[in-house]
Length: 270
Image (cartoon, rainbow, N blue to C red):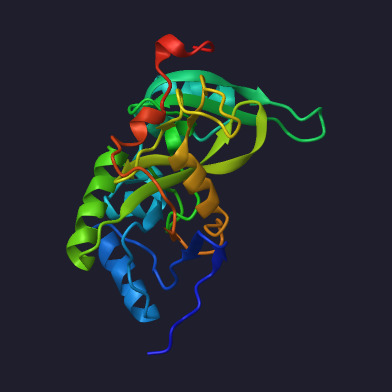
C-alpha cells in the first residue's frame, strides 16, 4: 500500500504529523480504533515515545458528552444570566450545569464599532477557568447540539493510552487538547486538559541555566507547549483531530493535566 503523506511539521529532532481519514465521531465510537485505522491506511507505525495529541471534541463525542439544546429547559437563574450576557438561555443552563462557579460575566464592547459580545467565564468542575465551561457549539455534528468537556479528561487520556498500548504494543503518551482564550491576550491557543504518560508540568528549579546560574522560578507547562504546537495542524476547519508528535524527549512520570492548575492559595487574582 502506498504511504500517504500526512500534513506535518518537522525539524532535525522533532516531527509532528496529523492523522487523516478520521471520520465524524459519534457516541460510542472507539477513538483508538479510528486512530489505528488511520495509521494502517497510511502505512505508518507507532514508535516508542510518540505523543498523541487528540482534540477534546472527538473524545467528548465518543463519550456521549453532548446535549441537544432543544431538550433543555432553562432555569430562572439561567434566563436572568442569559439576558445579562446576551446568550441563548438554554446554552447558559448547560454552561451553569458544568460550572463550579461563575468567575466573570458581562458584555464587552469594541469601542462602539461592533455589537457587544457576551462573556461568561466559569470555573469547571475540574477546576479549569474557561469561557462557557468549555461548552461548544462548533463542529458538533448538528444544529442546537452542544458538546461538553469529558467528565475526567485525565481518566479519558489514561484509557486511550492504555488501549493504544494494547493495540500497538508500544508505549506512547496521550494529551487531550482544547482551544482556550487567555487573560490579557487576544487570540486562542490549544492547551492540555488531560494527559497520560507524560509529565504536564516540568520543574527546572534548582537546575542550572546555560551559564551555570541556579534556576529559582522555572516551571514549564510542557503539555500545553505540545498541545499548542499540535494546534497548528489541528485547525478548526481542517478535520484533523489527532496529531502525532515524534522525537520529543519528555518525562513519562506524570500525574495528569491537573498539575497545571494553579492552587487557589497561590493565585493573586482569585
